[in-house]
Length: 295
Image (cartoon, rainbow, N blue to C red):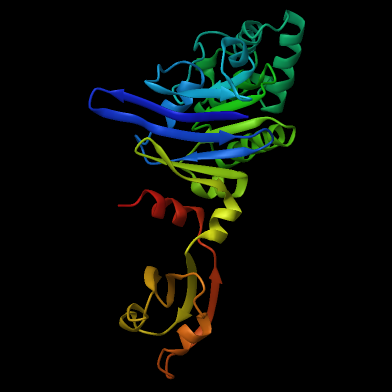
C-alpha cells in the first residue's frame, strides 16, 4: 500500500502541500481530483523523490520508499518525458532495461504492451512522428513495461479521443484487477466516477475528501431531485431546503437534504401544477467535488 502521511511543501509564500494524506491500496484504482494548483502533481512527484518535501513521509507497505521500491513503480508524468527522436520500441526496451530487466524480457514486454496499446504498427516510428494520442499510449507503455506494483499517472487521459480513453481505461482497470495499486489524476469526473474504486479530493494542499465512490455518495447530506414540471421557477425556489442546480425548459434539477420526503415536498406545490415525472438519486461525483472544494 502507498501511504502519503502529512506531506508539506512550500515554494516561498506558495503552499503546494499542507499536510497531504492519502492511501492507495493494491487492487484499487484511485482517482486523484482537485482544482488546478491544488497539489496533485506535487504529491505525485513526491512519491518518486522528484520533489524534496519539507515534512511528512512517503511509505510503501509501511516502510519509507527507497530507490529499490521506486524501480517497481510506474510513473506517467503530465509533462511527457520520452525522447521525441528515438524509435518507440527502442526506448520502451531501454526503459525496461533501466528497471533492471534483461534484454530479452524487456523486448518481450515491449512487444506485448505495444500490441495491447494498439501501437504494434508504430513501434519502429520515432515518437515525434506519432499523433498526440499515440504519444499518450506510448507514455503509458513506458510506465507498464516492467509490470509495476504501483502505477502513478498524471492526467493520463488528456487529449485522447473516446476510443483512446476506453482502451486506456480498460488497461488500467485490468492492472488494478490483477492487484496493482493505481493512482491517477484527472479533470474528467464522469470518467473517474465510472472507473475508479476510490477517490481522493485535494484542495489547497490537503485531501479534503477520501473514500470509496459509492460510500461517499451514499453518505452525502444532499440528494438530487430531477423533475419535469410546468411549475414556475418562483414556486420551485420557494421550496424549503431546496436549491435549483439547473433549469432547462420544464426540466429542473434541485439539490435537497438527504432524508427529505419527496412526495410530501412535491405535494406542497399548488394542485394545478403538473408534475410529469421525477427522480430522486444520490449526488454525482461532480456534486461532491464542488461541495468539497467550493468556497
